[in-house]
Image 1 (cartoon, rainbow, N blue to C red):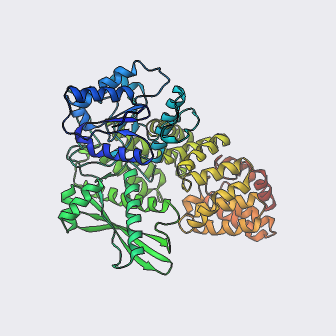
Image 2: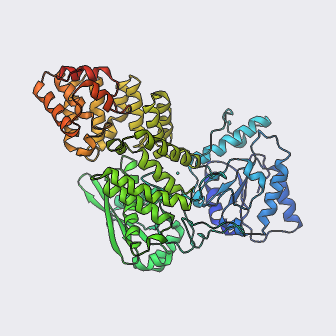
Image 3: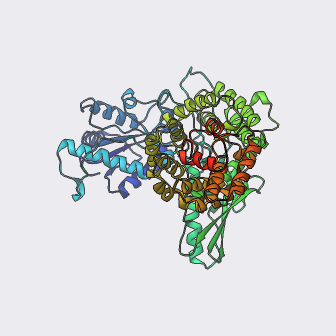
Length: 625
């Protein structure tokens, strides 16, 4: 450990040495100096003096907080924490110094930490996995410290000019935030669990609640195994390695739902066992994700398999394509989509396994899992019934644990879904419920793309298009190919009267996902109509409508694509086609017999809601005022 005023001091309990090493390696790889003690023999006058000097000289003190540190009543790291707190009292309040990091689901309100740690923002790095945002945040802190001190840049590099510090990525929970976190589609913000580190320790006398994770809870536990490639095909081997790594990262990020066995533990289990059942038992996980790579004319196909470890039964299969010369699919969210689909297959299996469990014995996770499955299964045929069934289950979950992350997330999703427009007689009630849950969730995970997309959609409904655009840009700053950010940015631009920019934003995504996303094709049709390109608008609107369900077409957010089709055909002087489109819509929503009725029916967040040229086209199609 060299003496430096630009170093980060890592303080951790010996049980967290592995995760601390991951954080250390990530920081050092980014050119940040880290003081990281690996000695097992701490203590002694000389060592104490050295530690005191380093804590006194370091730029940032980074305590690693976990279930392990919580369980250690005594430990050398507690002396380090005390020394750091003592120094913090001598430092100006606007100068950063303490940077607490949690590496699991430890809660700020209950962690055994000095009160001074709670005065600053925490950062969550599940399993010690450091994101690029976290590395950038540390660099900004060091730059601001250096600027305040007026010192020369470290390592011969010119430090960036100090700027207002952004909220760090994936902040740890506040005292008022939820107890646990699980994930949906997403999805989302990243849990890597170590074997034997799932105990939920509490202070003596603390009130007991049903925990989403219990000591023996193997629900939604996963291991991602190495993917197989044809022997002798070096390119296929690279694809297998890259996609397996991407799947692992996506599942680690899918932390609202999944717990993932660490890479090193997986490697050890594979080395010791050949059978999937034995690997799962060694890792104490319920599900395995395997992959195989095969050559196809355009490159490589990657088949992903969700397996139940104990039975070695394949529960779900999903596929990806990697073009020749690449190692990953060109569209980044493709991997995330497939992983989320496999994860939902695991949720279905958890619900099936819990069928013999008495209803009164369901805990928070049982209730939440069942809610999302019922909402998904019944939503297409009985949207209202699906909502009511899911809501009853989620209300029970939130009664057991009012701050549970998964139940909060799902409450926001089912209430802010466009599907409520098809049945609710008071949509504003659902919006209010969903909005409250959304804000509560964002207080814990302010970078959740799903929740931010929902918030942007609410801004669209309220006419706050610039605010919606800003949120979409924030999503895209973290993931430029985000399937949440791109459509929302496009809608905001269209509402702001910038259709050419809107088309450029979403066109590539819509083309990529056209086969599975007719609503996206409908959105592009709406943009072409706004551009006055009626022939393209009519063709795309017809294609989208032909593949959308009756429920979607009757929905006042998606269904207006039939209005776009009618108006475009009218402009093209195709009156019969225009009337046919109106007739199709009126068969689903009989009251739409006038433009005035259309204005009342169409939701404010529909693409062309309030767009007067649309109503002019409908009048041209023969719809009376």
